[in-house]
View 1: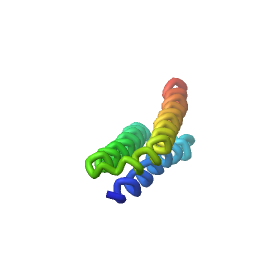
View 2: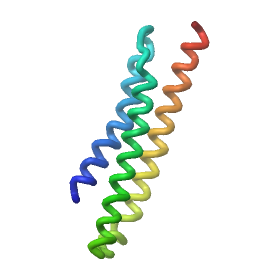
View 3: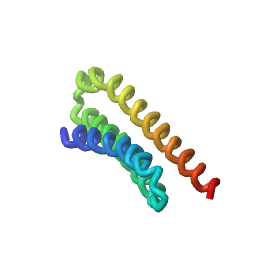
View 4: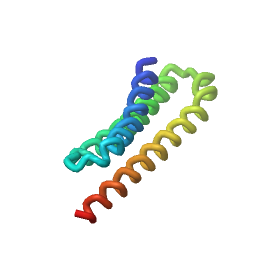
Length: 104
């Protein structure tokens, strides 16, 4: 079950890296797959948060109340930061590419 935490971390990093990669390719005229990267980023964020929910469900099933009470605020904070960060990075990407399309 600890793999859910590792998977969540990796997917969270992917969720933030993909929009940065898309923005790094921003000035390249033929970069057309930014929408695919946007959906992949949002999907990685969603699955990352889902992994945390599944892990919390596991803790409830084994009745490890101490672990739940010790980690729930951290999980809430990090999940919120991940969602806000992913949405913000993807909105920046959408705005940048929308400006390119308006110029053409």
